[in-house]
Image (cartoon, rainbow, N blue to C red):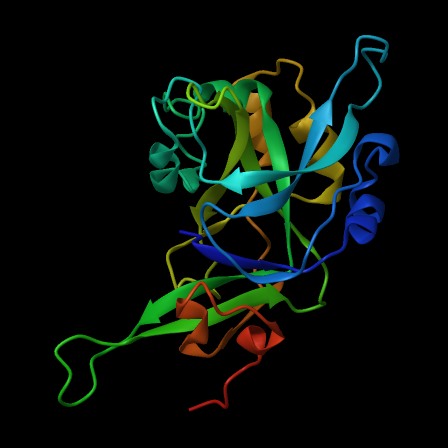
Length: 243
């Protein structure tokens, strides 16, 4: 499960990190320490113009898209609220994600993401209070979360909406005590193949989706202020004193 994350990079820094086509990829971005479903988030995609040689890597572009994938056949966008994550194990087969997995794969830049841990209830509590944790690379590098995106046309306004979902996988041992699922991160050498919209065998694509190596990420408790999507600022990722 990934229901909130932080993405604070500028358009220029993402252009450099993901080597995107500057001519088509300058978008205005604001730091968001509490990225939540239905918000617009930066998305890196691959395009293959007709003039591009078949053997050349796809052109990378930076755009913004709504979090929560809306299938092309959906009657209204509310279905996207239930499509914020897709399990890596089944995304290639599920009707809502199958077409996107085949042709519309993207990357979601992130500084880190949040998960909520429910421990044992304290004395006098019927249920344990959930404690938010922020999970981020120990070396402060940028994460590239694997995602799928889709285009949906609003029949009333006649406008197109681009939306996405984040692929998840089994959490590594170091993080499994916080939550049993985590986003699937891609390494730089897999970017071209993942972003290429040209048809590829499903098995070949699944081979790119390798869970992160243990020990790369750090997890620490943060303020419950992140629970409210209206709160947004660097104070949300400040570690709490250990207890």
